[in-house]
Length: 139
Image (tube, rainbow, N blue to C red; front, side, top):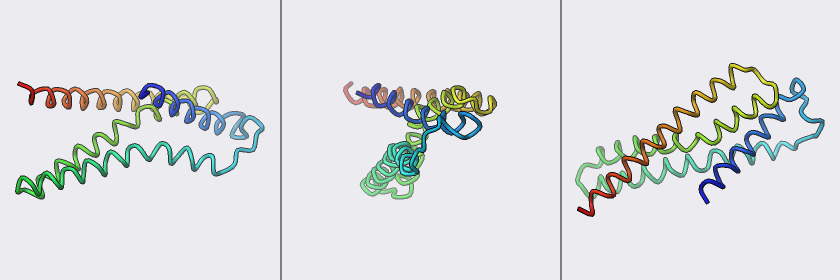
């Protein structure tokens, strides 16, 4: 299911970016309503914002339970921002595909690939530490 969602986000972002850059900004000759762009932007932003808010609230609650509210808030903020940024990699790769397919500036495409690889690596690192931490409780 997660792979399908990642591919869906990548495809939608790639299509919107390709339409933006194709034919010097004139698109494919189709008039795309502005609400489509708003919907794509909302789709891309909802997941990272959700991860950031849930980790911030969880860190606050754990800080209250542990007696260090500011420490819990700081940990929740760091984890939440890390998770929020790491969930953007499908969108960034989709933008890179769209730049190359639409004939946009090549520097933007290569920059998006570099940023996408870094975000994907951050995602894998966070998943590794999460599974390692979760598995250590079973010992």
